[in-house]
Length: 110
Image (cartoon, rainbow, N blue to C red; front, side, top):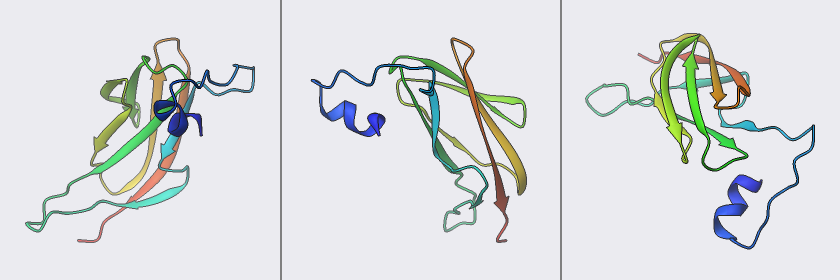
């Protein structure tokens, strides 16, 4: 919730961090989701945008799909990927060693 609210309300100081506060959270997709990748009119797979929120706005995040490094983000934590059909695990690690993973499945409509 803070991720959506804070950019539009500069006076908002944020939530005090407790031991239950998560540093990183997936916005999309939810764990256990089944995704169908969109295609262009020519049939080319476009991919899907994965999103996470981090408690620190300037954190650097490293993304791993099935334990393979696929990219890095800073400030805006969105990454477009086009995983192959099947089950996958996407893991995001921050510069302090915190991590979060989401499992999802990709279906093929071709």
